[in-house]
Length: 91
Image (cartoon, rainbow, N blue to C red):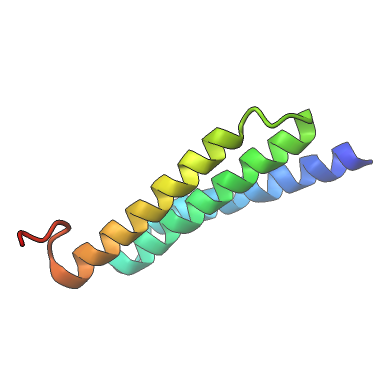
């Protein structure tokens, strides 16, 4: 029964990833696309977590941590680029 629930969750997360990817491609504005990419990253972390539960291992924990750090840094960098026009300040 637990395996069936995990499979349903993986299917739902996969559909959410597809929806976020479509929003990333056709988003009406740049902030919408950045938000969709951030949500896509969080959903990928969720998929990794569900796979770790299904396989009863912690082997992918580092992958999830690195992915979360990269998603956060990317969101902050793109938000700063929208706000100021540059990512790195020259001062």
